[in-house]
Image (cartoon, rainbow, N blue to C red):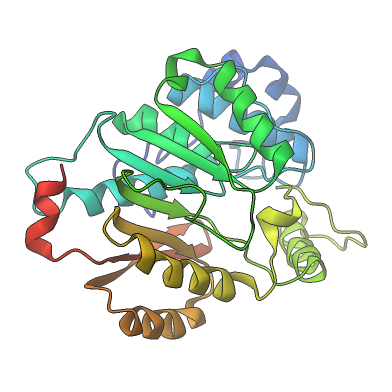
Length: 307
């Protein structure tokens, strides 16, 4: 198998998975590994247990995260794509500097960190950043805390804050003295549970290449992770509007945008709220295309003094 050239150059997952190494980290994974028609070892990505065990082994092998687990039914994210988001944020912070800023003095905010806590874990283990993860789901929040409790080496630099009100994103989280180099978010994509189930059915059919009558949430997801009223566009629009109230406390606001057609309205809103600079960073993982929308209220000459 060739290198995954569409991933970020610093992504540790650019090369094909070494399943011998991964199985040595999580022996149970061996029950789900097989050789495909091309003679390559892989797993069936339509099986939730296989995906979770693969994630567990990747986090342990590449990021020294032990005892990682999530409850059945929670979002089980693809690690390479999550790592890409982190590396592109590093590039964003690197602008006009001689090197990528590293260490716990660089603070990042992960909005909707979920039960998996993947973004803060990868961010800290890759660049040493201090991270704050937030969530509105109590069970997801508790599982994220459990992951921290079982990984004391990272728990000093990763904190969690529960968001008690789903109407807000930054309010109730940020104090007046808080300063973050960036915020990041993988927002709810769908506008209803029905839409989420239909989308996952399409994904599962593509993975299995067969007719399936009942959707199988192979990557999981709770309501707060997969859908919200108005879907992605409404959520990010709310984030943009609220970001104006915290424009001096976060250097770069960023968010994933799955639907390219939403960019026009989002960019129009950013112009309306007088963002100083807006960037769209394209990402791809296999056939999945996505993008990061980033905006700042700081003039370029003031950004360098942040670090």
